[in-house]
Length: 255
Image 1: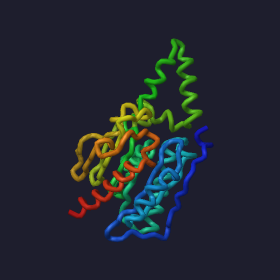
Image 2: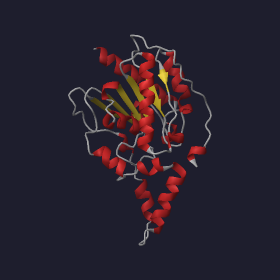
Image 3: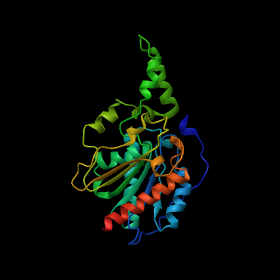
Image 4: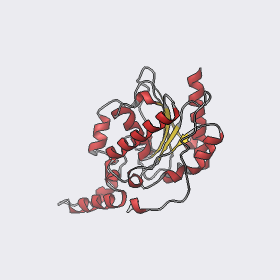
């Protein structure tokens, strides 16, 4: 059902664009589940107006396909971005599943040497408690639980259940360190998130890598208002914050 949704807006990839010394890393924007690259339209404009080279893939039937396959598709896309631009690394901004997918690239597909800064927006790094929300449907024979799971899959594809706490995917991801040396992490969440529950699931652990840095912040503490989960990519205040964080990451890297 989610794969058949239509989305307003437009984002083009400017494959001729080349980053300069002031903005050396192309920015790759990765959308979430039941979404598309069009959600980034205004952020793309904001970043390009400040000299960033920006790309945004669509993947996995609007983010509903099997997570690992989507990750491989996005990995190939990023390799194309690096080859086309001649850049050494990219900055990534990922919303929801897109943020988790980006961290999977870094951790499981050995992309740490190709990512300078990862900014995640309400990503289910530790899963969402959708399973707890479904628990009220569970009966002794498990029939209701099976129906509930099938409903999630029908609406959100297999990727929906893969982001639920305790899924095999999240167990695999949790079996290794959360962050990798050499990558800067900024995790932004909204306090009123009802999709990734609790919102703090979008935070990552302390800085344990020799060269890694992790920043966890609520967008409300940075001047945003009541931003819902699905509005994180399109909210003007969140876009401002993302822009500031990307610039900050470059400035700190030059120090």
